[in-house]
Image (cartoon, rainbow over all chains, first blue to last red; front, top):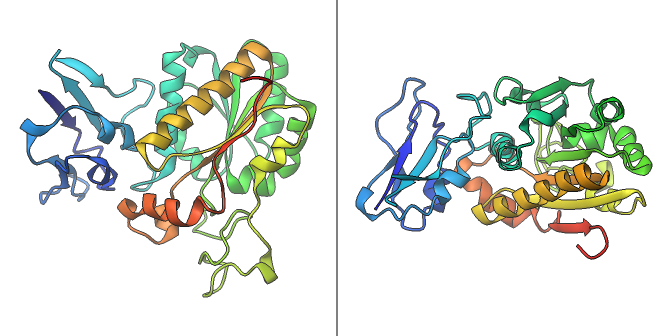
Length: 69
Length: 247
């Protein structure tokens, strides 16, 4: 079981994480953050394996990944 | 829960780069290398003019802002008086290969023991997307005209890593890209190797990083990795062009 935390205020909606997620669990949200951007969001949290490719690819370090030890 | 990937404390809050820009990604890679090797306290960056200077309020190690193109000359001075520090330049392609080619080339010729990191995004980003010396053939910029760069008029892209690799005193020369997680890992390894050779063997090291600039490539940020794969990599091949014997 893995969990990702997305800082919606730092996210700039570049969508690079959406591209790299091997299970396609990420998308750009319909709701907007305070800067007017559509931040990334996770769709099916239970399926996340915690591979951290999204976090590695995020240019703005908006994603942090945690895993059950 | 165990942390798999946490935000590097050397990066401070938000940054001013465009969405999908290669600069903050490279800042993160450098921050990771510095943190993992405990070099952050010893690092001094000679920073160029260009988009790269948005890094000033974003990263938490020592930076010096240099005149345009002269980062290699400033880094030479810093390294001569602070021999134990990790000194590296952080320059764009217009800075290291265009305006500051003299400084870059002669620092390499003298074998000055610092690292040069050149962020090659094939464009002058900060001033609004003018052609630089590394602009691809056919790439449309604000100064190339509607048909893109024409070699009959403005020549061919400058491949600086290959040029520096021919210099005798250069210790390590590599070109890396950061458009996929795999390439990010390779880039991190190359930068770490360059820093290590500088610190342990006093070598001049040069790493060229192919960065994405979706704003001036005129593509969506999420399409920029495909653009890099398709158009940039055939022109700028990746790899280590010069390594110390046997490594």
